[in-house]
Length: 419
Ligand code: ADP
Ligand code: SR1
Ligand code: MG
Image (cartoon, rainbow, N blue to C red):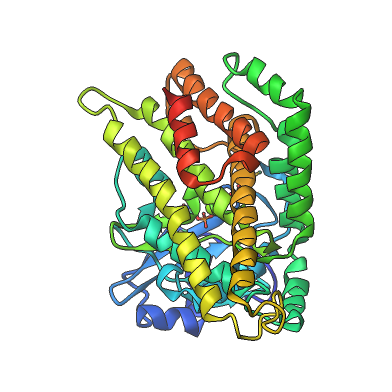
C-alpha cells in the first residue's frame, strides 16, 4: 500500500504504514507479529494511536481535516500537524526533559510519530480530578515555560531570527482563528456552539454577554493575542496538554503554536489549575473532603508563578550581553536601569497572565469546549455551584488584574471567593 496522498488511517492501514516507514518500524525492532495498536484520542481535535511491541513503542497522531469533537461540519486544516511537529521539535531542543521526542513526521499524511509516554504517565487533568499530588509539577512547568518563552523571544534572539520564525508560524492562522473565536468572541455573544449548566447558569451566561467592562478587557486581550509576536507559545497549555507521573512532566499537543503573547501560555496553565481548584468540592466524598488537596493546588499555583519569575529573570540575567535585540546592552547596561526594565516587563507579564488565564477559564464554563474537571461532576446543581465560583473569580481577575501585585494576592482572592 503506497501512502503518496493523504488518507485517514485506521488500525489496519496504520500497520501497513508502519511497515513502510523505516523510522517507525526500527523503533519496534522491525517486529510486527506481536504489535498492539489502539486509538486512544480523548482530545478535541485529533486521532492518537498507541503502538506497542515487545521491542519498543511509539505514538502516532494524525490530524483529519475537521474538529474531531464537533465532527465534519467544522472543517479545520490538517496542516496543524505540521505546526505541531515544528513546535514539538523546537520545544524539545529548548527543554528536552519535558517534551516527548519526535521520531517521524509526514506532512502529506498530517501524521506525527513520537515517544509513547508510557504508564504511569497520565493526563494531568485526570490526576487533578483524582486528587493526586505532583510535587515537581511547579518546578517542571516553570522550567518548560521559562525556557521555551525566553529563548524564542527578542530577549534572546536577533530581530532577523525572530522575524523569520514569526513568519513561519504565521501559517498557523486557522488554529489562531479558532482560538480567537472560541476564547475571545463566542463566550461574549449568542453562539450556537456555546453551552453551560442550564438552567442554573442561564443568568450567569447572560451576565457575561451583557458586561461591557468585561467586553472591553477581552477586546484588549484579543488584540494582544492577535498582534503581539512576543515568543513561540504553545497556544493550548491547559492541564489536558500535560502528561505526568510524580517524577516526570511532559508537555504535548502544541498544534496551536505561534508567535504570540507569553502570558497566554502561563495564563492557560494557571487558569486551568484554578478551574481544578474550584472543581474539587464536586469531587469530595465521604472521608475525603479534598481540603488538603485544595491547599496543594493553591501552593502549586503560587510556586508556578514564583519559580517561573525566578527562572525567567535568571535566563535574562545570564544572557543580558548576548545577541537579543529587545534591550541593547549599550543602552540598558546600568544595573538600576536593567532592574527597572525587568520589573516593568515582569509586572506586565503577570497582568497578561491573569487576563489570559481568566479568559481561558470563562470559555471553559460558557463556551463550546468544557473541561472534565467540571463535566465529571454528575450532579448539575453541585457542578453549577463550582462553576459559578470559578466564573466569578475569572471575571474579577479579568477586570481587576492590574490591581494585583503578587501571586499571593491571587491566591487570597481565590480563598475569599471560595469561602
Ligand atoms: P488533541 O490534539 O486531539 O487534543 P492530544 O495531543 O491532546 O490530542 O492527545 C489526545 C490523547 O492522546 C491525550 O489525552 C493522551 O491520552 C494521548 N496521548 C497523546 N500523546 C501521547 C503520547 N506522546 N504518549 C502517550 N499518550 C499520548
Ligand atoms: C472547538 S474548540 C476545541 C478546543 O480544544 C483544544 O484543546 C483547544 O483548546 C480548542 O479551543
Ligand atoms: Mg489536546
